[in-house]
Image (cartoon, rainbow, N blue to C red; front, side):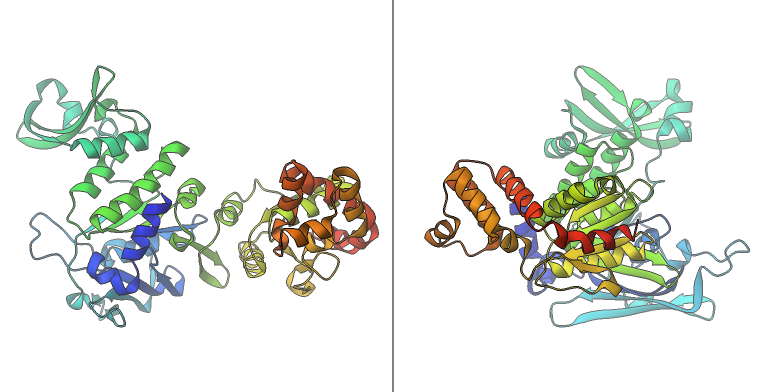
Length: 482
C-alpha cells in the first residue's frame, strides 16, 4: 500500500491535481453553521477522514461539502443537494446557522497557483451562490443509503412470493474481488437483479458463495452496505465527489482496514474525491497522516487539527476508558525510561496513567495541547535538551541531553556494558561511526548478539538506579495531576 500512497500522492500534488482530479475541492471555509466558526478544512489527500467525538461537527462538514457542485448537464436521473436540505429551520431548531453564515468553496483550476472561489451565503431567506459552481456528480452515502430490505419492508420482502425478475446487472469480476477482500471471504458471483411486483420496480443484490445463493434479505448490514458502496464507487462517473458517513459501521476490524485500502485504490484508479467521517482508529491507521483530520469542540468553539496520529486520536475517542492522565513523550526509548522510573519510585501510578510515544518535540507539545482541549488531563515529558515550560504542562527528563545520550554516556552504564558484553562503548560508537543517538541501543545489541529491547531495558535500569534522586521532581510533578 505504501507504493500506491506514493503514486496517488504524486498525482495529487497541486501542480498535477487538476490534470488528474479535475475541479476537485482544495479547501472549504465554514462560518456560522451549528457552532462551527472560522474552520478551514484543507483536503490534502484524495481521501480525507474526519474524526472526533460525537457532536464535534463531522456530519456538518460532510453535508456542506456535498453542496459544492452544480448538477452536471449530462446527468439525467440525478438530484443535487443544497444547504437547505441539511439545515432546515423549525420550531425545534430555530438557529442551525447564524444570519451571516457562509461556506466558501475553493476548487482546483488548470492554474495550480489559483483556485476558483465560490461563496454560498444567506440572502433574503435564500441561499445564493450556486450558479458559479463547477459541475460534478456528488454522492452522499449516509446511514439511510443502505437499510436492509427486511427492515424497510421492501417489495422484495412483502411481495417475495410474487416477484418477477427483470433485467440483471452483473458486477465485474475485479469488483467482486475487491468486495471479497474487504469482507474477508470469496464470492462465486455477485449481481444486482431487477425485480418487479404490482407495477413497482426495484433492484436487489444477490451473492453466491460456497454453493449457496442469498439475496440482501438474508445479508448482514455490513456486507450489504459494502456491496452498495463499492458498486456506487465503481459505477459512478470518474472524478465524482463522495461523502461517506462512518463507513466502518457493522464491519469487523479487518474489513475496516481493507475498506480504507480500497478507498485509496479506487481514488487512484477513478480519481474520485472522498470525504468521510469515522470513529475507527483502524481506518485512520490505514490512511497517511495528511488524510487525517480531528475536530475538537469545546466552550470556545470548534477547532480542526491536521495530520494527527492514530495513537492520539484513539486516546481522545476512548474517553472514559483510558487512565486519569495521558503523558506524551517523544519516542519508545523515552516511554520505556519513564515507565521504569515510575515503576521503581511510584509503582501504583502506572495504573493511573497512559504513556504515549508521539514523535518529535513539536508533535508532543501539540498532542498534549489537543488532549487538554478535549477535556482530558495531559502533560508532555520531553527530552532534556528541549527544556521545560511547567505552566504549559511541558516537563523534561533530568540532564541536558536526549535520554539516549544521558543513558549511554553514564559511566555506570558504560561499565555495565563492558562487564556484561565485553564492549568498550566509546570505541564501538567511534568504530561504527554511530552519531545518531537513536541507534545507540541497536549498535550495542548487534555487537552483543542480543536484541535492542533487552539492551535498552538493562541499560535504563542501571541508569535509573544510578541517578535515582534526580527523578524525584518529575515524579512529584506527575503525581500532582493524578
